Amino acid sequence: MGSRIPTPHWSRTLVVLATCAAWATSTQALAATQDDQTQFSVTPGSLSFSTVPALPPLGDVVLNGRAQTTATQMTDFAIADATGSGSGWNVTVAGLPGPGDSSVFEQYCPNAGGCGSDPQGYVSDGAALPADSLTLNSTSADFVAQDGSTGTAPTLQCSSVCDIDSESAVKVASAAGGAGMGTWLTNAFAPNSLSLATPTTLRSLSNEEVYRVNLIWTLNTGP
Image (tube, rainbow, N blue to C red; front, side, top):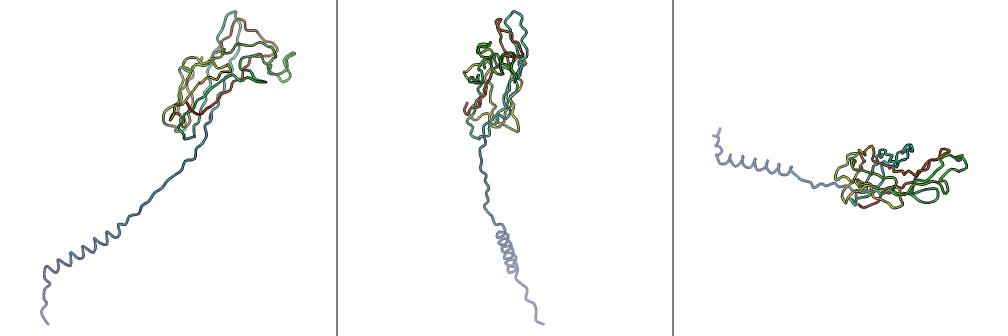
């Protein structure tokens, strides 16, 4: 047999280098990239009361020959701002005039069958209280975020007393631009936050008649 000619060292090195270069080229070919993206759109919702304002009964006034104040606790209400506009909002309240309504406390028959000689409804030329007899004070109250709402809270406006039984609308709550987005519930009205002032000239009523007022709460866009 013929003698084997040994492979030169430099030749073996070239083979190894060529193999490494081929592996690196293969690895680079496998490391491909692909651009990707995703997106979403937003559909605005509405601005609404999620819990509507509803005044509690004021109870009985027992005459004692003095001017009196009858107080009770304001009920909570909530606003849901799902507009996504960040425009802010405000809540106003006013007495509601018109047929079948009254913007001030007036003598009223609640019975379907009438009250003595008076039919159901407001009594024509009946007793009445002056405007601004009913006041709201929100000094101790605030707004609490609901349903995961974040951001700047709205504010209550009646830290000094608001008269709410007149035809002139008064602002009781507001959210500045960028505030009040989501759902916000009032909280911690004081036990005497709603107050009725009655004079010594208050007339007593018979036949189950009462003093009654109609109020309208309005939720407006903008602070």
